[in-house]
Image 1 (cartoon, rainbow, N blue to C red):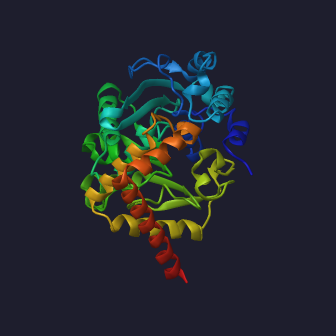
Image 2: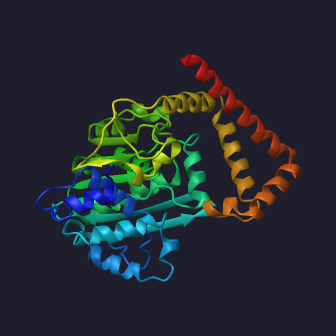
Image 3: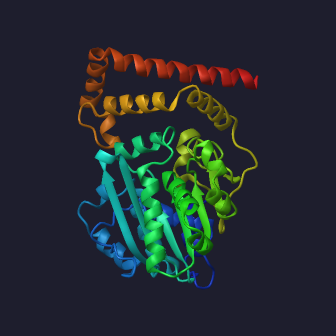
Length: 358
């Protein structure tokens, strides 16, 4: 079972100017975008530095483990810059925005691999609870702040640089990359070579008839693991490439679990039965709620999990937080009723979906 690290050992001696980016390279770029390069990589798209130099500055930070999504991101950065393929990749136009009051989590970075193109890469959901709430907001809002930030980022890049554009993102990063490409003007769309959406959710049904979206659909490469949950949410017009993962169930969302063979992922013919069941159940569950009800549920759950001051996902399992959850449910009958009712409807949706398959 080979992964991105094995790929770097096999392909690392071939610079991009000889062989351009492939799907595995694009996943590596997306995964590296989870690293917080604040104060290292310039916010100016025209001020480019080698990835190796950015890594050298990052790896000596005493708090570097707090500046990544998972510790493996550090290992990937070290492995990448120790290859000829990635060491001299240029990086610039780093942007990192976290605005709780706007329910916005957005980050992006641009890579220059050396083949004459630029790869605009959008960070997926990080470890902040605001980022997760923004994801749920996709189910009842036509657009979310991160999507609008992605469009702004693409437009600013296009004004400042002339290279053909590739775009990439894992999870929410894939969604906002597609959104930005779909909403860009025709001149920018013509410069876009491809968009890689790696297990990112889709869009409301209204997006399926959007002229800009329909224009860029042929340029979208969408990858989902066989037991995908995130990547099958909402609507997609483009076909999925189903890939094999070393993990099971929801854990397959982890890009480090995706199996690689030479310069591509290992493909599968069908989604797992469990993934199809989740798709049917969550679709029915969401369809049974109005946008206002989804908004109310999102607010209630967020208030519930942050009632004790939690701001990051790792805070959720702290014993003090668990005690706060219990107190919150005991004291607030309305909150308790909303959560229990929603979970009951979700369970019913799963039961109905299961019966439908029998």
